[in-house]
Image (spheres, rainbow, N blue to C red):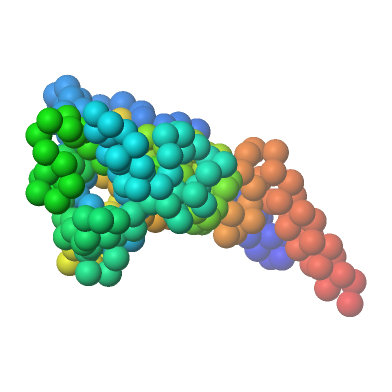
Amino acid sequence: MMRYLLALFCLSLLLCTSCVPQKDLIYLQDKGNINDTIPSVIEQQKPYRVQINDILNIRIKVLDQENATIFNPTGEGLLDASSQERAYFDGFTVDLRGNIRIPQLGEFQVLNMTTKDIEALVSKRLLEKEFNEFAQIFVTVKLAGLRYTTLGEINNTGSQVIFQERATILEAIANAGDIPIEGNRKEVRILRQYPHGQEIHRVDLTDVNVLKSPYYYIQPNDVIIVDPLVQKSLGTGTNGLQTFTAILGVVTVVTSTILLIDRL
């Protein structure tokens, strides 16, 4: 009877535990449910609207550039990964009321505006207070990098920055060192900030249809959360050898225990 119980236990263990299937590891699989073409970037990506805590990089150029020095505290150099602190201190941070403050020009309400809207707003204020139309004003407004956070089963967790105007969730994850085998690619959560509050969205990175998702492109202040697969929680291993080793260890312990009980 004891042998039958042991065999049943081993069989149950084999059925309940397994290594990570290959289909759970491959990105952008065609699962047979694509009926149309992937929409173009222009159709898919709506202009980003500025939110609280965004940092704006504003450049103002005029015919006589010396007259615009006060408006360009970060100088003419490009921001890179080694100058994130400079972007924080010299950029224009959107405060809790949705305003930024520019020297000589005062405050601007920029919440929920696009960068093109802000460029037009700053240009108008410059013409009203500082320059005339002959100054040939040229204003550029950009986000001081796409800042986001990664948590969970991802190789580099914490705050991340990509110095691009837009980036996909695949680029964001690659920038953070990719998802290890133990991470669940099928249900990646995105915590996103909106004017009315925060919402959680889920995307399946193993399905090619994620390219059509409205959440395929990340936004500033996104939090990307990757949960562990059940295999990690059970400790059964991520490949065939690890799974076999784990099962063999359990079977060895159970067998030894039964033999000891039989001798008593």
